[in-house]
Structures are given as structure tokens and as C-alpha cells.
Length: 473
Image (cartoon, rainbow, N blue to C red; front, side, top):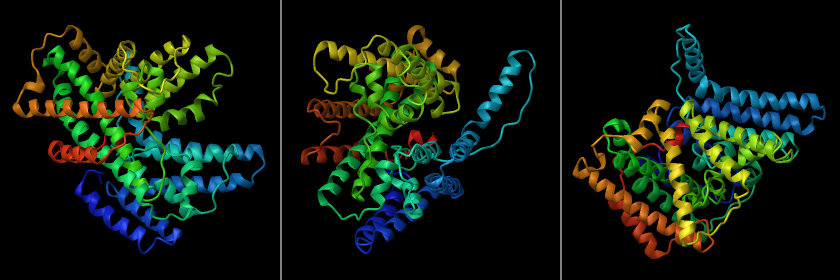
């Protein structure tokens, strides 16, 4: 069930009215409604996936309760690793089993001993990487005694499965989101309107920018060997805006929906394409994941407590794991390594200080453009099906002799190119204006809302109904 589908609006309207009218004075009944609605929302893709999220939720709830009273360090570690092992085991099986099988077979082939190993026909559960990390962070915080485990199973199940952010984040911490399920929630018109505006802005990013870009990106990447250098450059730039519009658009819609139901989610994007270097980029891109790796991987590895050289190794490990988190393909690992190398350059030379406000001066503009091009370069690996395709695509940019220009191959594609550029101009104009005011959230007035609504109605690619990219992660 997609946020930009008719089915979703038919689903959300009765949920909204039940939540705020007959059930408004009973928190427990509201939570029951949210839980049932979340399971319906998630089971819409495949009802069998519900058993996985239910298993993971109940396991971590029980482990959390046991950890509260257990004082024996050895038993506490066993409980912790039971949770981590089960969650990562499920994630590893569904997401990485075939990857390891293929890599194992390729290694033998490389050394002259080809072997045949059968692959399993495994369906990747939607959003498994997101809710797995969310439940694991709960257990880790309880283990470290940073968080008191809840006794309320209903609230915990609802926290894990909360449908606005279930399948593509933000990855919420229990310390922030879980307490909100215990409090009485009263309808706040101002808060709800702000949520509706954020949802509308996210919908604009998705249907005007991401889904229009997707058609152009698909055509260019599928036939990259025939495309001109200019076409390939545009393909990489369009994909950068496709994935940003798609992913940050989902996050905006999730945050907006949550506000409509009286909840506050963390900000997941802070205008990342206004970043002056890769270090700042990762403070603004997919913040819930990068902060998760900081708290549960980088710091446990030693962080920067053991000197700069060790810190650089820890940073490199984080980016390697981050790439692997995104998918079972070497392309994602190389994507992570490229960002790791770029990040380490600024880390080593001490130029990774974040400047929150974008300045319209030549030096800043050059730095922002350079960072964006580096990010777009890395995204070629993220988008391509294989490493060889990625390298051939980049070779085509610098040395290619193709003459085709997919974006001009038909009047339809030419119109989509124009629409995409127009959407990008609107997007970046609003983000620059908001950031120059010191904000990290676009604020829409009445004129902006009308412009945004008209753009969605007349420029949105509703016929495509494309899945959100991060559903596959």
C-alpha cells in the first residue's frame, strides 16, 4: 500500500475518523486501532511477512523484560546476543543468503574450481532492515540500562509496527517514540495542519520529482552503452534527485502522517544537497541510519577515544557496513567505500565542521556543486545492477562514443525532462530559502500550498505508481 495510491487514502480516512472521534479519550483503544491498522498496512504486500515482524517484536519485548531484573552479566550477554542473533539472522537469511552463496561459488570459480550451488527463491520482506534495527536498538539500550523496558506489550507492538514509518523509516529510537504511545493524545489543529503540509511536500517530491525522474533514469541506465556522455551525466543527476525525492519524500510523508495522529518523528533529512562536503552530507542524509551506526557501531568500536588513526578505521568500517546494509550486491559496498574515502579525507584534514546555513557566495556554491557531483558519481554504483555495469557507465561519461539521447527520444520524454527540471528548481529554491533562514524544514504558506498542489495534480506521475526505492532495503 503506497502513500501515493487511492488504496491508501481509502484506508487512512476511516482510520483517522475512528482514531480522533469515538476513540479519542481512550489511549489503549487508539493504540489497538493503530496496531491493527499497521498490520493491515504491512500485510497489504504479503500477509506472511506479519509473522516475521510479530516474532521480532515479541522476542525483543521478552528479552527486554528479562534484562530489567537480570543482574548476572553472563546471562545478560546471552539474552542480548539472543536478540541480536535472531534479528540479524532473519535479516541475513532473507537479504543476504543468495549473495553469500553466489560469492562463495564465484570465489571457487576464480581459483579454477567452478561449482554449482542452487539459489533459493527468497522474497525480501518489505522494510525488514528498518524495523530490525529499530527493535535491536531497544534491546541494546535496555541492556546498557539507558532505557527502562516497557511492561505494555500493546504499546511495544505498536511502536515497532507504526505504519507511517514502518517500511522506510525514519528508524526511531524507543526512547523517543515509545513514550508517546503511553500519553493521551488530543487533536491539535495547528500540529495536524503542519503535518498535512509536510505530507503534501513529501508527495510533491515523490510524484513530481522522483517518479518523473524514474522513467528517464530507467531508460538511460538500461541502454547506457548507446547513450551520449551528456545523456549519461543527466541520468546520474536525475537518479540523485530521484532517490532524494523518493526517500526524503517518504520520510516527509511519514512525519506528516505521524503529526496528524499526534506523534512526533525525528527529522531524517536536512537539505543534504546543500552540503559543502561529504562529511556534512552524512550529517544531513538518512540521519536516523547514520546516527544509529554512530551510537551502536562507531562508538562501541572505540569511536575517536583511541586516537585519530583508530577513529579513521572505525569510520571506514561504518561506511562499509552502511553500504552492505543497503543491499546484497558489491555495488552497494563500493558505494559505501567511495563515501567512506571521501569522508575520511575531510576527517583527516579537520575540515568536517558543519555549517548549517547555506551561503550564496562563489566558494560555497563551488563546494556544494562539487559535493553533489561526487555523490552523483557514487550513486552510479548504487543504481547499476553490477560493478561492471557501473564502470562501463562511468567510462561512457568520460570516453563514450554513444550518440543516443534518451531524454530527447520522444516528445513524452522531452516533456518529462522539462517537468523534472522544473520540479528540481522548485525543490532547491524552497530548500535554499528555508536553510538561509536557519531552518531544516520547508515552511509552506497559502501560495506555496496552491503551487505545490497544482504541481502535484498536473505534473505528478500518478500513472506509474512506482514503489518507494527504499522498500527494497
